[in-house]
Every structure is written in structure tokens, then in C-alpha cells.
Image (cartoon, rainbow, N blue to C red):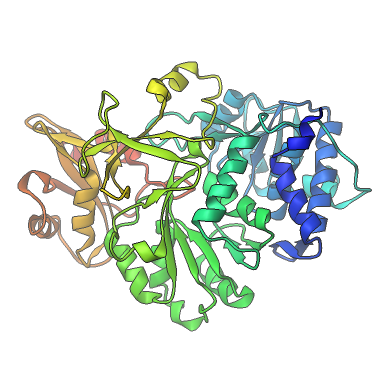
Length: 510
């Protein structure tokens, strides 16, 4: 019996929507638009083109570009052709870019034209290299031209679809091995948890190389037949304009974009009344910031999306009706995720106490690409270990306390950096803050705050302000002012960069 009888691949997700509503608007980007039939046909053409290049099932194809209709086509074409898609952060260059290409073993790469120079500069690059959108050999031109082929490359839902590289916030990126089956389960979880509907109009400005942009919003919306408007990059005035022009009702942004958007001088100049679903994630949203956004947009429902690449990434959601009672929580597990909070011996911790979040789920990766040691460590005890420190209440809601590696041990007492960050965020002159441990001869580690100011304030004033709400041992002993905090392309804070920079700066280290 053919495996197609019970097929549940990513390619099927798009094809089923195209058969159900072929003439509905699927995707727009700049001056191009695609119906569901057109987008599905484009993916078939692109899939055949990729195999005609000599690529075989299981080969890795790197995607080095910003958001576009062609970027989405390339991913879907890889899944239809049995190839493994390798999304690469377009901010990476040099050794970081080379590492992902080499570690994944990519034999082909598709590149945005304005990024081509960074591939040119590499000592070694994949032998098959083409543009994402320009010229006869680009994925876009292959997708737009020619007959629509009847492609069938005998793809199974157990086949690997993508290597999702972790952000590398604490170590070198690891390639999470995501199967077609894992991601399709993930799409069902997203549709359920985020209340996605076929008549939605979704704007995606956040990068699609990141699992949230691609797998929480692009593919789940294609699965239900919604309309997706893509932006190349998140530019706040353009986001505001597009909400009004396209009557956008669904928008996902990292907190680092929501905050300046709500404070933008043009915020009140646009009609944003169509917006009904505001999703945020990729990093912790400080509670004072969430409250400010809810005040600015009272008719808007907020969804706090939490997770990590290895699980698709969505694992928990705090829904709009739950924000008022639990503003600090990340919510409860989504449809296909089982979660526990455990101690070092894998015992469930008591309600309200901190422990590590562990998962079981069909959404989970198969392990890390060419890294059996990391795989064994992450899946010890029959559960996937997230590295997140959290508390769970008696109704199953979790509140993230910190990344385990970011907890500060000062004089033998553990301090969660988020507690200190939330206290400092209540000062009106603090725009952004990140709290880390810095080495100290007396205390071993001291609580240290890196602050981006939005008004006149001194370090002494901020330390005094924190004393009002924090226990003495949590009060920062150092406040360092910086122009900006280091983040990766998806908005995640890179605390290891702050620690490394501090160690290299004699004034801070002293």
C-alpha cells in the first residue's frame, strides 16, 4: 500500500488549501500576489527545478535571505522535493555563516542579491548557488514559468524537512532535526492555540528564517487558507501603514518591535481598528511593557507565545482572556505538548517552586544534526530538557523565571535575572535592561544591569529605585549604561555577548 494513502506532509498542507479555495488570495509581497492555486503550482515548478539541478533526496539546501514570496516557495519546494531546508539568519557573515553551511553539509544555497557578497567572501561555498529572486536561474523565475509538473518524489511524513538552528545564545548553534510530521503537528497546535481562522489577514514582518515566523504564522495560515502579507523586514512606519491599508487583523512581533511601535510618534495617525490579534514572543516581554501596550490598544487581544526551536517552536500560549489575572505567565501547553517542571532528579517540583521545564511531544526534533552528545544530554530521562527555569501554578500555568544558565549565584544565593529586570523596568527612564552575572572576588558573582536609557538617570538612582521592591541580595551592585543591547535577528537577547564584552572592558570588569 502506498504511503500517500495516509500522507501528512508539509507539501500536502498547501495542496489541500489550494484544492479547497484555489482562487483565494494566499500571499502578497511588494507588487506580487498569489492565489492558492498559483502558489501551489509555483511550489511544484520549484520542486522539479531543484531536483533537476542534480539534488537528491536528503540533500541540504541553505536559504540565506530576507522575507519574500520566493523565500516561502523555496521552503515548500524543498519539502515537496524531499530536500532538507536550512534557514540561515541573514545577519550572519564570515565565520558564523560558514559554520552553518559547513555543519549542515549544505550542497546548495539560494541567496538574496544584496547578501551575495558575504557568500563570495567565504573560502568555501556550496557548488550549487543561485539567486532567490533575480535572473533565469532564481527560485522565483523557476516558480513562475513553464508547465506545472506532476511531481511525486515519494515523500513520507517521517522524512526530515528542515534543520532549525538554535539561536546560539549560550553556545554554538545546534541544528534541530525537524521532520515533516513534527511540523504538521506543530501547525495544528498553532491553529488551535492562536485561534487562527480562514478569513484572517496576517502581516508577517518578523524573519521567516526563524521558526516563529515560518512555523507559527506562515505555514499555519496557509494550512487554514488565510491571506498572508509579507514584509521584507520589520520597519515600524511601514507596519503601521500596512495594518491600515490591508486591514490586518493578526500581527506577531518580538517585544523589541512591539515596544517602539507603541511609542512611535505616528502610532495615533493610522486606523488600527482592524487589528484584533497581537502575538508576541522570541524573548520575555517585561510586565510593565505589556501593561502599557494593553492600555494603548484596549480592543486588542494579546497572545504570549513561548517555546523554542527544538519543539517547532510553540509550546505554551497565554491567551487574551488570561492576561489580566496572570500577566507574568507564559500560559499553558498547546494541543500537542506535554510539559513538566522538574528538579535535577526528574521529580516534579511542588506548585510554585522553580524547576526546569521538560517536554514530550510529536512536535519535537529528532535530535541535533551530527551532534549525538548534545542529543543525548537534551533527551536524558525520556524527556526533552529545555534549559528554561520556570514555576507552575495549581492550574498548570507556567511563569518563566530565567534561562538556567542565566541564573546568578551571588554569595551562594540564587537570583533570577528577570526579577531584577522587571524592577528596573518600572523606572520611567529605563528603555531596555538586561541583568547578568559578572565575576566578583568577594561574592563570586554579582548582579549587574546593562541599561539603555530614555531619560536622565544615574546608576545610583536606579540602584536606589530597585531597593524599593527587591530583596537586598537582588539589588544590582553595578549598573552599566549602553546605547543598545545585543540581540540576534529574531530579537533574542544575547546575554553571553554582554558578559564577554564586560570581561574585555577593564572599566566594567574592575
